Image 1: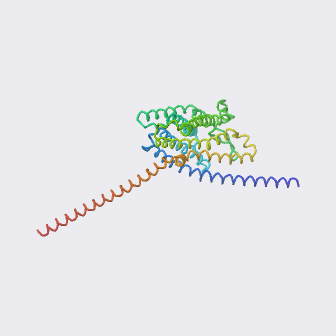
Image 2 (image 1 turned 60 degrees about the vertical axis):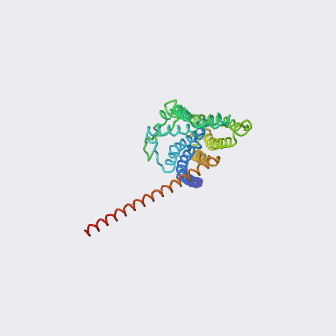
Image 3 (image 1 turned 30 degrees about the vertical axis):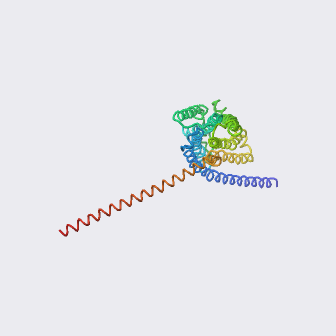
Length: 374
């Protein structure tokens, strides 16, 4: 009787576990096949559009807008490396990290894009703080543009070093059992049981390193500079009466774009990265199935938050700045007018060609008739 009850309990437990796995599989398909595909298409298209709008003549004279355009391009890089990889692996079971080269190169590039996007927000916050002390927009010039290009290039080169361990260390072969046979599988991650002491240390510490270099330090710096930006741009504006009201208003609208982007980063990316640093322990997670399923659901929701931020730069700029919205309207109207002008020009060209062909045909006909009369 006891064995019978035990079998019923085990069967019920297996059925419940199978049902949970099916639910988790459906959850993965909705997120990675549906939502992540939408983020990649929407985010790539509109981040590029945001960069185009931010580099239009009226906005690109602000150094903040030029840096924000760089942020938009870097966000595209994150979407096409990190987000795309997760969509392929988790949604369609396609792994592009199956070899040492592709594993290390892909992880290095995706992490470099993430770190560069975070630190670019720090750079633009420092730049905006310097401008906000006088609320005087810095007009674009060749020297200014060159200095900004140099700053961005130096920042990109410096950020290679915090990510160099991905390029030279990550990944190792592990033995897995499949159909009674032991096979070697390349795991694109840091492993605690690796013989390399640095490799095993990174397995337990890498999440904290990411948290410090990509989240904590950039977030603290942007938060500090944002406080001073708000103070100088909005609270202490009475000390800048020497500037025209229109100039102050335009500068503040540019400032709100930066503040909206920083708030989005702090609200969406920071909590998720803190969650991973505090909770990620593969051994403990897999020791209890309940903990495993709970963790996986939470982890995917946080992944949605992280990747949503990299796709919504256009939305943040559109919602926070009227000058950005006006430039979009001008961009659309100009493209529409250019399209109509091109259509009218093509129609006139076709009409002229038809008239020329008709004249040639009539000329040939008259020549033929005169020849016959002769």
